[in-house]
Length: 157
Image 1 (cartoon, rainbow, N blue to C red):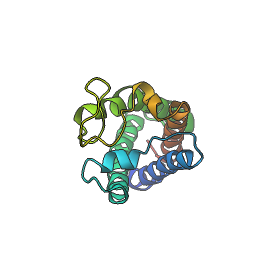
Image 2 (spheres, one colour; image 1 turned 120 degrees about the vertical axis):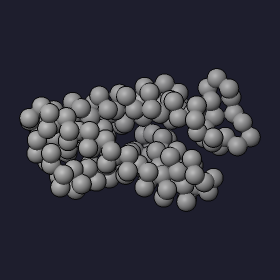
Image 3 (cartoon, helix red, strand yellow; image 1 turned 90 degrees about the horizontal axis):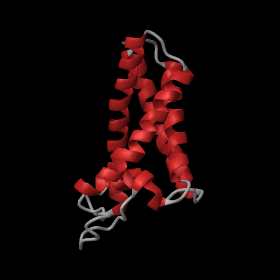
């Protein structure tokens, strides 16, 4: 397995994905703030939460990158389009499972079913994170496809 490629390009792909998501926020295409969502697991201070959340997101990206590297090694091939296809699946899973399920375990995200609590400061993402904007699913899928394409291009099986 390509350990050096995983370490370097997993970081590059994750920072790129996060950058796309943050740029989409600044452009008004999405209100989903993954670093804030992850960071508020640890603190209720937004600026500090974004920093902690960014670190958690980078660590998560490295974990997913090792999965991509293992898949490429098992298949004996890698390419930008195969990585992009993996990224599409990864993005769909994030939108349909990971993000909506956060409300069930996150102390500061309101629940669709239970409603807001006194310490819930973030709205529930909803299916496909549509509560964070109509373009959020498209931006998220695009960012994950780019993530996968970077890994598929630069990781050696």
